[in-house]
Image 1 (tube, rainbow, N blue to C red):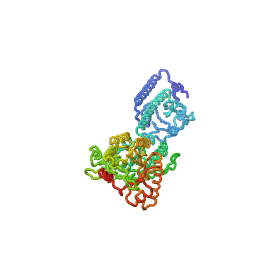
Image 2: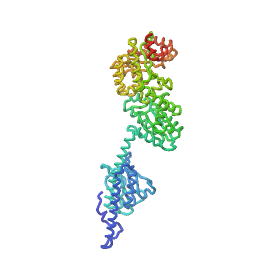
Image 3: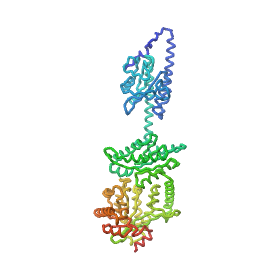
Length: 625
């Protein structure tokens, strides 16, 4: 609407026309003083424009109470557009609408175009009503008043809110008030925009972009602060989706993202409102539960049940994906990193125990953690010193037909100077978790290659099988280091077979494919270990040019008494022969098992029936036998 100068010049109803010399000069001085005070209010408010770290609600209440109140008005209500619904919502007030602190009595919503406030938003222009009784758009809020001024809050030409003020006197608001409110609205818009920009920056720094959950860095910061509270009760739950890598490979990145988003939503929805939920890794989530440990364990199991329910959506419709979890009480670690290490150890135990379950951190796990830390430290020292106690043993691989020696599998062994023999599963795990697996691998390979070179012509036809872990494959430079060691000891690549498991390939398929392909190009052999125990062995065989497979010992163990296992082994041997692959049966312990494998046409065998893993000197005796 057009704002007329009459708003300024007309006397208010009931006021007598001033006579010359009857005090008009004094009133003009009073009005001038008020305008000066109004400008001082704007000047003071403008000094707050750089307070971009304020919350938006703080800004609005600051406008209502600090700015509008000082303008000498009766009331003010500030509306903001609800972006999700598109209507105007009362967010801050001064006057009868908020008699108690920041409470708004009976907050109302208005659609754009509804009432004078809604019309102001719809028209993107100030509206000044001299007599609300004559305007059908007037909406009575806390009480009826006779005049109203509504000014839009504009940002980039778009209405984001409205500042509205009413007065009990008719024709109270003048063009001066319109100008003051318009300026105030512009300043408010600037502060809101800056605050929202800062909030967006914080979200980008603290939130996971895919799920909207807290990210790893922010989770650790929040957890550290929580641990600093005296007597804080609660637990940390670490959740990992089982076989997510395989499913992600099947569905592609889009399907994998949908699973992660759905899993995040389930965790958030099924947890109490005070729960901290974060995504701290690819398919790993962490929660801080504010409850006693028993209740936290119970909730953890419920969350695993929720995650195991079928997913919905075009790409993931009907898919089921279990999860494993580790939980630790807040008192289990003095720091956030220490506490997460306890939860991670429990999670690892849950996965090793069959997945799809929750494992609590306890004293036993704590002792294992301390032992693992010691082993990792001592292992690094032994590698650096090239200690004799840490070396390579060799288990013979024989031709099943005549039990002649075909090669050997290289196995790491450690005689700890204080603890005695340490099992390879234990110290290899410690090496992987501490980051020493690459140094350990190089140490064992060098020992094995040196021994192979020292055996001379008698071992010229033997093939050494070496185990390669997922972490080794994923590290840049692995291929170059392997080839350099072979050159150093003058060993033909064709005499080395790299044994890999499906977990090695699935950790990063692109990197695995590149590295293993390069190994094959250089002449090394590639053997799929533990065949039959993985998630997708048949499809794995079709994607990589393997030269052989090893049948896991779990299928060989009772082959003489279990027809089903015998049938599985028969199928693997037949398939291997058809594909032109060598087939090695692991874990042969009896003559009966050997006879059955020979009858099924298995080419190679390995197990205690022939020999346990022995040092290099003892293996040399087997070569000469």
